[in-house]
Length: 290
Figure 1 (cartoon, rainbow, N blue to C red):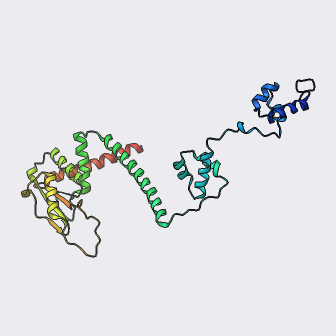
Figure 2: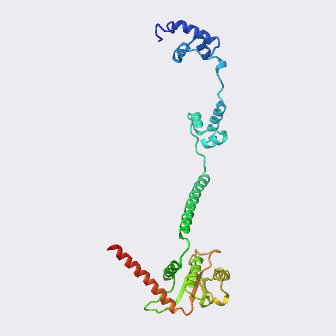
Figure 3: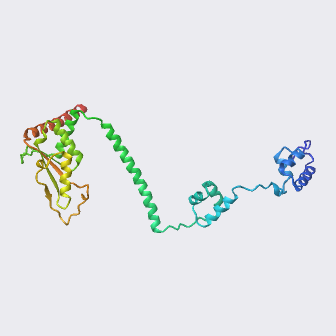
């Protein structure tokens, strides 16, 4: 209630005037200005129960969208589909159709599998991009190798992949076998560092007989830059029909064997260098423990 001594003391009389003006088609603002009512709570009480005139009912610009959204929802459309179709936000769609039942999923097994496959392919792509970024960062971090670094890496590489002398099988020769073109090129660069002439090298291709033998021979010859006279007869591996080979396709070129002629002294230097590396590591480890 208004204060008895205020301008709203005759509330009922004021209400009669407000109702009369409302029924005459005036808006709330017009009534407020006409009766000098500046309190919205009082104005609401004065007009309580009185509907606004038709001319004050502004059409809602989203009414058409709302009806269309409800119609599409009843047809089984998802929020995403409705959003694309009508160009409105999901929050608005949710507000408009929240009283409607959720559509039943109508995907068949093939559609569900296709969706799952697309999701998995996206994950694989992300993983592959991460893998490639990691490799690229690591590659750039290497920079240029010094001659000493090249020498030490080559010693370790040979001791892992090359032939070695055994007490029960004396073979002090330098023979290196690998299927990785990068390893072959590195080994040749390492031999160049050690002063080994290319004329002292002999090559042998080892490959399954069911593969592209001629193509592999040409590939390795081009890679090492040597003529046919530097290649021994290709060694063919017999194919076992009970074995399922995975090294197939155009990328399979077998292995390349590199042998250094008159390599006894070179072998002894390699073995000595390797044990020098081992001893150095042992001493460093012992120093760290004390």
